[in-house]
Image (cartoon, rainbow, N blue to C red; front, side):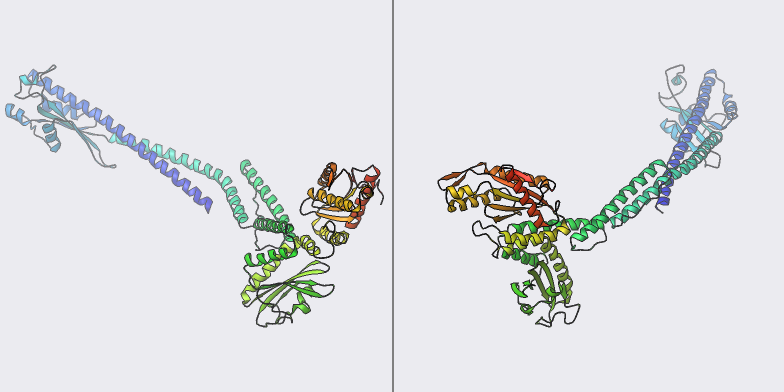
Length: 597
């Protein structure tokens, strides 16, 4: 339909151009015909006037009628006549033959002394050309009119008029126009035929491209174009198909991977939109995780979760619970309005490790106190002895869908922040070294379980450092244990200054420290280890003492070298032993071939 409309528009344009050309051609031929007739008529009129003048001088009086008859016999000449002015008739009389004005044209020429020409007739009837020229009195030149006539210079003495047929010129012009029109029509036909064939080859391709792009705009990237025969259109079709194929493949694959990483706020059939929304939400989740790394305790983390529920999803009736599946204890973290369930004696959502929705079953949870309320509860397992349960309550069934979506989305934030939540939770336990206020070895054992569990899904690379001061026992022997304790604090300070906030520093034992570097490639791990070693080039100042000591560092990589985090720590300890054997003050990377455990 679009192709026919385009071709019809082209036909109208060509017809308009042809019509304009024919009109210009007809006007040109008419102008040339009139010019030819005017030239011929003017010649005849001037002959009559000059002849009349000559005969008047010679005194011949019977010349006029014969002359006019002879001129009328010229081919195409219809009639010729002479008109006398009133002044001339008054002086010499009316003459032998009538010489009165025949019409208004004669009278106008006598009165104004100007030449007048007219054309009369229709397209398919005789066409006459009429010319009337004045005979003006003059005293200059070969003839002195004033010597014979009682008149003034410039007075009109008479008029010479003639009519001639111009049918032959008109026919010639019409034939020429007809031939031109015929040639134009034939040329236009062949032109339109070839143009239509040319346009069709490209228009079909353009229509197919437009259809594919229209589908792509709606999220369907499967549209393909059948390649035409013409080379340019073929290349355009193949390039378009190639781009659509890449988009379809990339977006489909990206959408599947995105769906495995995050639950989207809104479902959409357009994979490009899905990818865009997924990236946006991943960014928001990662920003949330980065922010809670800076929080000092678990209470601040919970405050961020509460703010999310309030501001992002506009929820105002919810509860947050901590449950320990091992000892079956429950701790109420936050109640926004009122706790409407007896969760202290157990939680169905936590026991089933899923979502409990009151709209799915009449008595979804027997612990609910208010039977008129609708509720949705979701359990988020964090670690063996910690689950977080969030319960949302409403009295409007229409809000349940929004609540379910909020809980699903909240899972993205909690799952991405499990490590930080565990870190904050463990800070509340006895897993803190009293001397350095760093995590101790017990915390490291808990941490390794979570890292191993997460690595199977995320494959995030970790670096493991074991840092030990060279010949630390000399400090205790040379000074005392109080100074030795201060040196241990200084070791912790130096290491902490060279790692990121998301990394974990642990006092492993004595003067040995373990460092867990989160999301580091192997080269970055080596750079951090070297920075820590070089930081001990400066003397450690304890009271009045200035102590210069070096450290040895062992490195292993998880999960690149092992899928067991505890084994990775053993590898780092073996690399540390190798660094000691090399004389200390060096960094050694675990090599399974040369460093058997």
